[in-house]
Image (cartoon, rainbow, N blue to C red; front, side, top):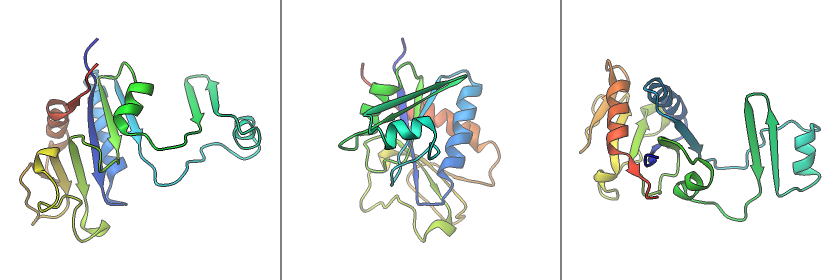
Length: 177
């Protein structure tokens, strides 16, 4: 089995991280890679509907884990006492992936692609006085004046997604077995 690769897609709130990650995942799947994702949230997720059986198992029954199996999908709810890092999560839940795309986890020691839109904030996450540019694979932005010590792509560029998929694959962290 080949080693699993990982990268993180980061950026400010409403910069377009999810839209970019979805496009990147689809491009990598098109290339026949097994792609899995991890999404870092800032608040507890409630993906079930109140009153439904799994909601009752989780909220009323206080079950430690609730696994819902249905045609074509499986969802696991699991209570935790502390937040894990993305590498630990990938090893525990995403075995068999060729590449794991992580949305968020800005502080994780993973290679990063940053999505930055001027409307999301005055400056990108990357700060050359604080961050090691070697941790950044690239940035995708609408800011025509932005320069960085790594590749910068404009949303208006042609074929940027194909190039970024190549960079993501080539520069991803490889998880040790």
